[in-house]
Image (tube, rainbow, N blue to C red; front, top):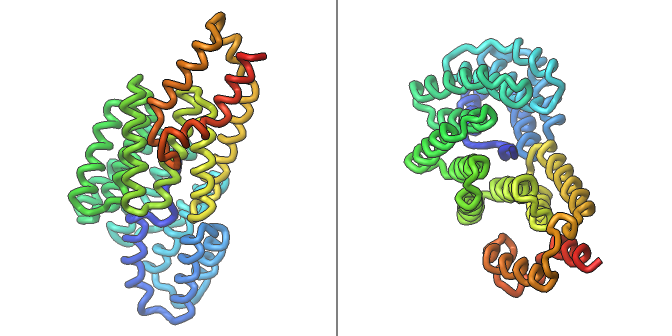
Length: 335
C-alpha cells in the first residue's frame, strides 16, 4: 500500500513539542535541528539523517532533546536495512510518556512494514492509541488507528479493518484533522475490493481522491491515484486504465516531496502493467465473440462506467484517452 506524505500531523505534533526543548540550546544546535527537518520536508532523507547524526554529536544536548533528535533520525531510516533500523531504535531511551508514544509507533511501523510481524505491530499500535488518548494527543491516536487498519488488512481481518477506518474518519472529522480522512477512505476502499465489493471499493477510493483535491492535499491525491491504479491493475486487470492512473500519480510525486521508495514503487508498478499489457492476448481469452459486438460493448461500458476519471472531464475526452487497453484490444481482435 502506498505510504504517507513526508510530515503528517502526528510528526508535526512531535516537532512542535520538541522545539521547546531546543529553545534553550545554543544557536548552532537549533540551526542544525532546523536544517535536518527541512531536509526531511523536502524528501532528502539521507541528508536529514546525516544532519541529525551531527546534531547528536554536539556538546550541550540534554537528554530529552537528544531523544527527540534520535526519534526523528530513525524515521529517516525507514527504508534502510532492517538491522540498522533495529540497532538505532534499541539506542533510544524515552524520558517521558510522549516520547514513549513516538518510540512505540516507530517500533510498530518496523514490525508491520519491515518485519511482517503483524501481531506485534497490532500490540504496539494499540498501546500508542491508548497512551495517546490518555495524553490528549489526537494526531498520534488517529495515526495509530490508521496503521492498525492497514495491519488488520494485511492479516486478512477486512471487516474489522473497515470498522477501524470509520473510527479514523469520525475522529478526524471531529478534531479537524482532515488530512487523515482520505487515507481512511483509501484503506476502506481497498478492503472493500478485497471483500469482493469492487464497486463500493472504487467509490471510496474516488471519494478519497476528490476529498484530497477539495482540501489541496497534493500528496494524498497522488497516493489515492496510486492505490486506484493498483486496484485497476491487480484486481480488475484493467491495464490501460491503471497506466493512466500510475502516470498521474507519478506526475504528482514529481511535484511534491514523498519518500523515495514511494516513487520507486510507482515506477515498478508502471513497468509491470506495461509488461502485462504487452503480453495481453484478448482474442484467446475471450473466445469466439463477434468482433463488432465486442468492440461496441467494451466502449459503451467504458463511457458509461468511467466518466469522472481524474483528468478526464467529459465523454469526448474519455473516448480520446481510453489509451493502451483499447489499443491492445483493437490489435488483438483484429489480428
